[in-house]
Each structure stands twice: as structure tokens, then as C-alpha cells.
Length: 448
Image 1: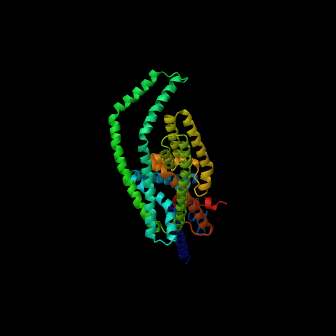
Image 2 (image 1 turned 135 degrees about the vertical axis):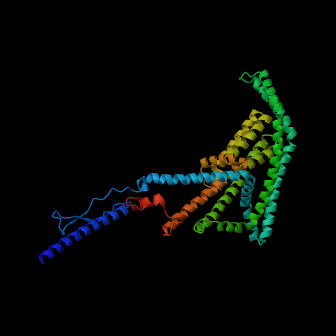
Image 3 (image 1 turned 45 degrees about the horizontal axis):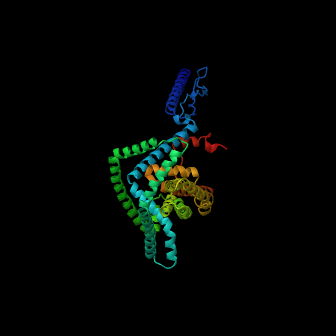
């Protein structure tokens, strides 16, 4: 019996050793499979006691070094800068493509923009006629016809005045050039008659050598005239439909906006339209006051073509800052050539006085807070619009900036109000590297 008891003891010891080896191998396999998970200790591995008996104690093996995720090593500021950077690049690319598309269909875009400006000017008359009981179609037709007739009469009057005074103006220009020549000869600048004659000869030679370019420019002018007439027809048809069916067009455009952003856009649209209406009506009133007072000053100073110059001043007033300078300079040059230095100086004083009153009294009082655009933004917008689409772009640039400013300000206030009321923010949640860092214990969401 003692012999069998010894054999059974040795067999039990071997079984215990085999079980320990199997447990050790299982722990190694589990550690191999979970090596990528950080901060996970390896399974305990039982080891033999110093005596090597079955009562061996288990100890924890040291954890293997684990490589962190690459995104966790990048600093938070660099991650944010990278995500902002690729979004800015995407936005810049989209704007570049948009500018290319606009440059290709510039005539259509400018015609529609002009139609929006004219609609903003004429829509209050449609509303008043509707309140008087006229149907929508009749009110729209009466307003559009009267508006187009007035615009056409103004254009015809300018052309008629220019053609009527062209001969007289050419005679006065010739006399003025002779007076300037005599003044230059008697001036302390020591200008000789030979120098003046050389300048005149150079101008004549330049005109003679560039006859072909001038002819091509004239032909190009015919093409531009055709484009202008086409744009005017497009603007007239667009104005007619905007006056008649503007609300339905706006509702259809809202249907193209994603459902989550539709309430904010629906609130920003009417406010932007009110800003555009206030801008157009205020600009027309200010331009009318400028043209009236400067035109009266030019008329009393006996400067020829006072009425056409006043109309030019009215039209150029729609280009902020730059238009006033150009129209005023044109009036001063005409007075200098036709009436002399004294009359030109008096015209300059009149122009500067009226423009100072406009900048400090009329625009703040008439436009008020409806249109709040910084002068630097005005200058940059006019320059960019002129570079992209010429004079039409310069006219459209400032109202576009004013409308965009109103819409963006409202959308920001609307978003803050929604967050204050506890509504979920519109748009997808953070994802990728930023989301990973935002949920870390040291991320921005966990910082007090």
C-alpha cells in the first residue's frame, strides 16, 4: 500500500506541474493578443515555490512597454491648427472655383444683382399699391413700368445733354487749352513754347501709331454695348419676376437648405433683405442730395454741362468713396478746362463741402444702424469687386458685404440662443483626432 501511495503522490505532482505550464502558456497567448491595449496588466503566472511543491504562490509579471496611438502624441494645438488649416484650404478652393464660375457668367450675375437692387428700391411701391387695393399683378406692372420709364428718361436726358453741348464744350476745351498754355508760359516753372509743342506732337504721334488699337477698342466698345443691352433686358425681366413672385422664389430657395439649418436661414433672409432695402433707398436719397447741391454749385459757376455732370455725380454715388472722388474730379477738370483755375477751385470747394456734409451728417442720419460696415471693409470690397467684375462689381460689392454682415450676425445670435435654450447644436459631433483629445481626461471638455 505504501508503494501505491508514493506512485499516486508523484503522479499528482506531475499533474500540478503540467497545469502550471498550461496556465503559463495561456497567459502568454492572452498577453500577445492584448499587447496593443494600453495600461492592461498581464495575467498572473503561477510559479513554483522554492521547494517546488504543489503549494506554489502566483506573482504578477511586469507589463510590457506599449506604443501609444499616433494621434495621442500630437499636441492639441497642432491638431486644431491642422483641422482648421484643411478647412480653410477647402474654403479657399471653393471660393476660387466660385469666382471662376462668376467670371464666366459675369453678365448674368451682374444683371441679377442689378435686378435685386432695383427690386429693393421698387418693392415698397408695390406694397403701397397692394394696400390701396390693386391686385398683385397690376401693382407689379405699374411699378415696373414707371420705374423703367424713369430710368430710361434719365439715361436719355444725359445723352441728349451731352450731344447738345458737345460742340460748345469742344470750343471751350480748345480755348481752355490755349489759356492753360499761356498760363504755363507765364508761370514760374520756366516752361517754353517748344516744350509744349513737343508734348502736343508726341500726343499726335501716339494717336497716329495706335490707330489700329483705337479701332479695335471701338469695335470692342460695340461688343460691350451689346452686352450692356443684353444685361439690361435680363435685369428688367428678373426685376419683374422678383417683384411679382419674390416670396415664392424665397420659399423655393429655402427648400434647398438642409433641414437642420433651415430655421436660422429663414430668419436671416428677411433681415438681410431689409438691410439691402435700407441701403438702396438711403444711397439713392444721399446721391440725389449730392447731385442736386453740387449741380446747383456748378450751374451758378457757369460750368458747361452742369445737368449731365449732376447726373453723373448721382450715378457714381452708388460706388461708395471711390465714386464720389471720381465724379468730383470730373467736375473739377471740366471747370478747369472750360472756365479756368479760379472756377475749378470754387468747384472743388463746393464738392468737398457737400461730400463732408454727406459723410458726417447724411449717411449716419439716413442709413443709421441699418447698414453698419467699416470704412476699411468698404474700400476692400470696392477694390475686390472692381478687380473681379469692373464697375458693376464695385457697385454690387458694398451691398453684398452689408447683407452678408447682417446675415452672419443674426446666425451667430441665433446659434447662441439655441445653445442657451438647451437645444442640440446643428451639425455633426466632433470626430477624429479632435474628438479623441476632447474626451481624454486632460482634454478641453474635462478642464475647469
